[in-house]
Amino acid sequence: MSEMTEKEMNTENSTEQSLTGREVLKMTGIKKQFGDLEVLKNINLCVRHGEVVSIIGPSGSGKSTLLRCATFLEKIDGGEIIYLDKKAATTSHSGKVFYTGKAEMKEIKQYFGLVFQQFNLFPHHSVLKNIMEAPVRVLKRDRAEVEKEARALLEKMGLADKADQYPCNLSGGQQQRVAIARALAMKPEVLFFDEPTSALDPELTIEVLKIIRQLAEEKMTMVIVTHEMSFAANVSNRVIFMDGGVIVEEGDPKEVFGNPSQERTKQFLKSYKE
Amino acid sequence: MTFGTMLTTMAEGMLKTILLFVLTLVGSLPLGMLVVFLKKSKFKPVAWLTDIYIAIMRGTPLMLQLLVWYFGPYYLFGMSIRGYKFPALLIGFIMNYAAYFAEIYRSGIDSMPVGQYEAAEILGYTKLQTFMRIILPQVIKRILPSVTNEVITLVKDTSLASALAYAEVFSLAKQISASQTSFLPFVIAGVFYFVANYVVAWIMNRIEKSMQYYK
Image 1 (tube, rainbow over the protein chains, first blue to last red):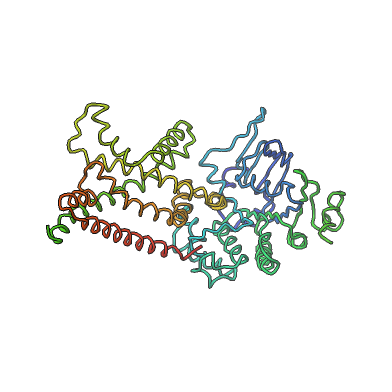
Image 2 (tube, chains in turn blue, red):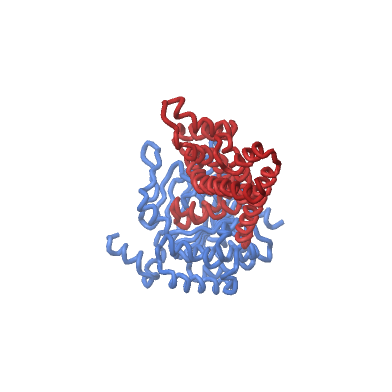
């Protein structure tokens, strides 16, 4: 791809249509170890623009670690991570992992956002400030413009009246929606969710899932690690089932949930039906 | 000596006590932060030296430290120590209190959930931005009660300056008491310390309350 087209694609939102299908994230041969424990064994993950990918699997299967590697919260021990043709991490023939330089890394980090299981809002900032701080401080954008967008995001999240509240005064579901708004305010190419509803009770879970579903309809590129099987089945274009640090099965949600080809997948899904 | 003259003589000492107290805080509160950074340094010798410094500051009497800071330059290097009393006191108090504050800061920083750092990192904050805008404000709220304790102790510890015969309020009380064979100077000094700490506690309480808008 020539430099010109790449630039166009990165900067112009109007070319969204042509971006569909383009690889936003490509992870190949990802290895991760914690001491002697191999958490990720040669994982390949490719996420295309506009795609919603759900990652399911039992606890300890490595799905959260995969997200943490994709977002650089954990360093990989082998493999390659590419965001929009920019190589973030590569592995040499001798097996040494190289991450790209600070300047390029900073740029790459703006391609993604992450929504945490525990929300991780900043408790000393108001809801509005939680959303505005990063665009203003990190992206150096105009404060008034950012505030307009932040309020629009809150409106979308059904939290317009909570702008001046502090996170401690919100329910878990509201906090998670603020966290989603905070991530969206950075205008990421892809948004990762690390078990976004695992800390919420069923009622609050519904309001968060509703928002994620809405984002899916708007063709937001998302990778969701979740235990909500019916949600994953409904919302995603692709489901990945992980176990023991490998991808056991991957494909169309109808296939994976309706007619899984692997015995391990059947076994896992059965535990959810009971 | 009338009560009035006693009070005016001691008022000068009170000012000196307050000066010592304020300058010690101004020096040791930020220095404590520097000490934490040195202690957390990835360059191990620096971290070890900082540990030794903190161990000595906390492990020996402050009165002894003051004597060493004051007389040390003379005994070690034969330097003249004329006019050096107040600087020696300041150095002694600041170095000592910085060590204690450093430990309080460290406990506060270590108590911060890792999720706060991770959220800031994902949003693209630099290390400095993360510390200044996300971590430090929350740390201050967490450590305020411990800092209040330390500041109140400092008010009373300024009386240790009497070891160098520095004419702060406690030294004066001793002197006047001995020359006048009166107990009154100690009562005046006691009331002074009590009122000073009452003010300190009130101010710190106000600061704590101003941070109660979030949990």
